[in-house]
Amino acid sequence: MPQDINETQPYPLRGRFRRYILPLLLLLLVVSVTLTLEGGRHLVESVYLQVAQLRAEAIARTSERLAPQAWQRLSTLSSAEGLPSAAELQTFQDAIANALSDTRLEKLKIYDKGGRLIFNTQGVGMGIIDRGPVVSRLLTKREAQIVHKETPDGGLYELYVWLPDEKGDIWLVFELYEPVDHLNALLWSHLAPQMILPVTLVLGLALVLWRMVERAQSDIDRRTQALAGVKDRLARLLSTQAVGAAQQASADGRFQSTVMDATLYYADIRDFTSFAEETPPQQVVAFLNRVLTIQVRLVREHGGDVDKMIGDALLAVFEGPDRAARAVSCAQAIQACLAKEVELPRGLGIGLHDGHVISGVIGPEERQDFTVIGDAVNVAARLCSLAATGEVLADTRTLARAGHPEGFATAEDVQVKGRAEPLRMRRWQIVQETTAPTPDSRVSC
Image 1 (tube, rainbow, N blue to C red):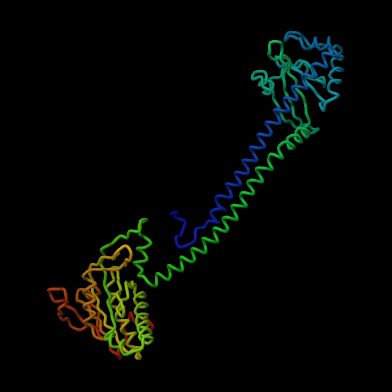
Image 2 (image 1 turned 90 degrees about the vertical axis):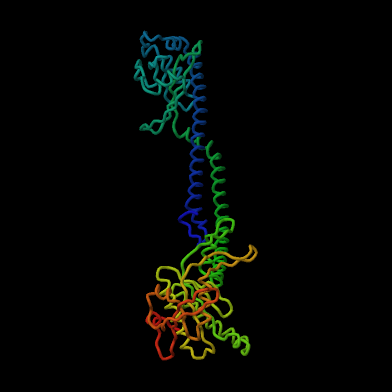
């Protein structure tokens, strides 16, 4: 599970969608539009260069028809020959002007196969060899070129195309000029319909996904709240250890049993059977709930975990280095609290014992229970059975671990069922006139 996801919180689908999916969709849209623009631009430029090629061929045919001598003179110049004079080129100039009259072109340049400028409608730069990258690339790669340039009169596209000779080699290079607005209008008229479809699809997909994510997030929130409610209700029915074990269970539902040191708290109500026989059920349940409520609250306040409630009995587990001291303090606080409630018809006996227990699942797969088992649990139960109303019984080893708390009577040996050797234990008895020990004075009943 990702570290930034809390298993107790609903999965942040909406936030993840905003953080990851929407940017990806936006990137997809930008890439789609960019690729469409780039592909369309290359397509339009390719078409326009082909049109420029046809125009150059048309200009060459018109010039040859209207000024055959001038065209022959100009188009067959060798690199060693000088250029014709302006007077000699006037006829050719008129033919070029006639050829350009039916186009949007206003300027024209013609280069020979060496890159020398042999004709310019503006009459400047004649005879200069163009060594720029555009003409050089065309002469070496034999690829038509298109270049955008800004001029005082506005943007222009320079279109470089070439005419082949009889052998298919470069004969003449034509440089044509086309206003930017014309080519841009053609570009956008071609690309706009192509961009509408991907933009609409991506935006539509984002909208559909957003609605699905919103509905899914609402459902996830509702289910998470329902599961949280179930978990809270189960937490009231199960021990904290059982809930933790369920959360840490393996994928196949197997629980891991552990051996641990713990102080066991075992308590039950004295003479509860006779009380239940003589008292209406409603009063029995109310009395039992009151006693158990006090115990559960104080066990939790002292850092213990209620393992189970069996009728009128309660088993709690205390863990940690100071577990015994907390268990003793808790037992004394419970007896002190019950002693203040004079209307309670029966009292409580409590047994404490520290030892090794196994924490794990018992029972068949169809019905299992998570609990602690071991000799320490049995000993705590036996001590509880020996305790009188208002008493806390603990073995001396447990009391030593608790730091030898005051108020316990002298040690006595008792024979505990299931053990060959007697168990040395001490009693603590609550007295109505006494106040609870210091740790318990902070606890209100």
